Length: 364
Image (cartoon, rainbow, N blue to C red):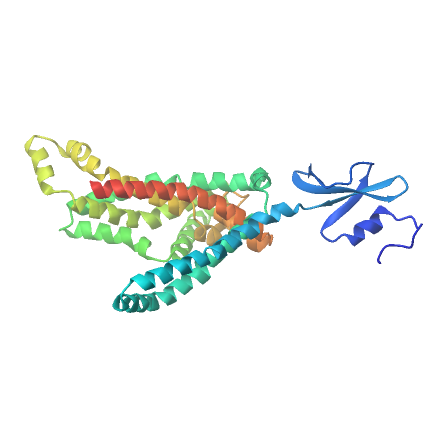
């Protein structure tokens, strides 16, 4: 009913105005059956339409099968409700009344936490995956800003081995002089930045950087593209070395003193005792500290958001900050969710390594 009267020549632009979820372009004679082609790097459904004598146009739209995985992902959990209900009913039939009552009481205590987890964690995660399925990951990976963010994050994570070394050295000093005021003072000084808020530590470091540049006529470290990322790494080292020191200190206290005494009786000096006895026993803990530090480094956001906002010249533009800007700056929530899934894949590999190291430590 919206088309012009018969025998009226219809322009392609008039037809394009009628299409809401696709586009109409001029085309040649061809088969009218729908087919799939690639247009500007995206898979597109095309059908040729005859609109007059020898006049053909092509109707291009998004293929319906692209939307199918999104709905399938949401429908599969719903399909599992039936088998789960049958399993619960069979369990109730086989279980005595007392056990069912105890289970119901236990779940009543767990219900608030489970509801909170479902609403604020599981639900948003499923919705994020749903939004990410609408994004071409290949196009996302071709974006130079994505690789810039990954590169900056990888460079930022290089502070972790340095902070772990500083934490280990500090833990050795605190452990050796733990009964003296010097060891206690050193441990307290290392722990203060760790227990403080990340925002307060960042603002304090910003004041220190600006005070150092005051009167020199040069920008402070956080405003200089050549030093902004190293400045953030120094702040992170300062803030996280105390927590890593605690882990090493606990591991050092778990080493039997008889091992050290035996090495001393054999004539081993301090360095030889460290490299032959202490360090081999600390290897699983050191690996755990490194992997945990990398997990934290790849999720850095607070310091970047408070101090640099990704600048100057994108030198501190990290991957989590990229997700934030994509979602709440450009309002591209699908692309932000896809980026978040990429981060999740990287963190999953690191988390698997952390769990393996934890099992090795437990066996040791």
